[in-house]
Image (tube, rainbow, N blue to C red; front, side):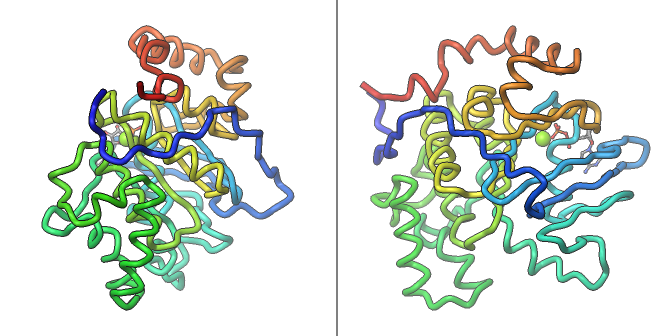
Length: 285
Ligand code: ADP
Ligand code: MG
């Protein structure tokens, strides 16, 4: 058995019920014909989809298809060339919009954690509320401990990131993003840089967040996670959305040949899907 620090509370992994709220509520995040080019490279073209409160929307598709660009446009780290991005009804392109204020309401988790190496785990989680929200240190640290408990790392509060495994660092990064009490969490391939044996603990934390009702947009190649946890899947190819729908459609009955190709391509290279499925093989002996 591998020492992974504090065990993450293991939920059982029954499929989450479909939770698409549909068009009856205003989306928290809406992309309307969004286009973006880098010089001659078209990164996004006419991208249309929306995210409702409480949903988990997974973005899948080949490398270079525009998924990361889309996430950066979502929180206005990137400008767009055409179309519109609305967050909670507010147009991010409107010059009157306080983009920094809105960005605080979106937690971002990257492939490479990007923790502060010179700060303890506790300080990494507490620093945002202290500096950005002017929370008193005692309050910020108390809440940080609570979040570390939630991601199963309360016993690592006083260590530095370098002492942690990749999976543990990513769980700290999730706690850090949650500390800002975001309305939406954006994940960009949160498990792609991890050793296979630490992927499951990160996906477990994300699954629990989803079950608690957190609104999440997740770029991932973990098709099993998308199948079980997403209630809406958006398939990207070369900067466009080629198909979107509930996971049952995308994974069992894709409407577009290119989606089938992409998934079967993953199947070839991803026999780990069957053998190392972290959502299944995660109960440690
Ligand atoms: P994905 O996340 O799906 O792999 P990206 O959004 O990273 O795709 O990239 C989409 C396209 O935009 C690719 O062709 C990529 O090379 C290009 N691209 C992304 N970011 C930049 C950038 N900062 N400068 C130039 N080209 C970029
Ligand atoms: Mg990317």
